[in-house]
Image: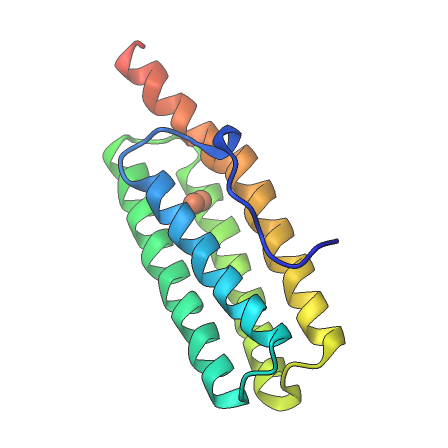
Length: 138
Ligand SMILES: [Fe+2]
Ligand SMILES: [Fe+2]
């Protein structure tokens, strides 16, 4: 698996600023993963990981606010997916603080975070986009 994540148009869910937020998430993730490979100092890497983590939290809050606004029927389950991912990310962050950017850990972060984002956006977030459009009758 290559390192990093690439935005493609089929990931667009076409609701509010969500797609821009996803693109920003991808950008922050790529900056972090790229920096791990380029031998940057651990302190800088930890800051980048925190920068990514902060944005994940901001993004989930915004998405969940829209779920409420549009009375998305899957919103409670969806919130659970977000929570589970935040927990996983928290554990990866702890490991990173202890181990630093070992090739094994960087590959694990890449696999888990990239895999989760692509799967979640293309299935769960898309489901929300479809709900919004169905509700609006378009
Ligand atoms: Fe989501
Ligand atoms: Fe999302």
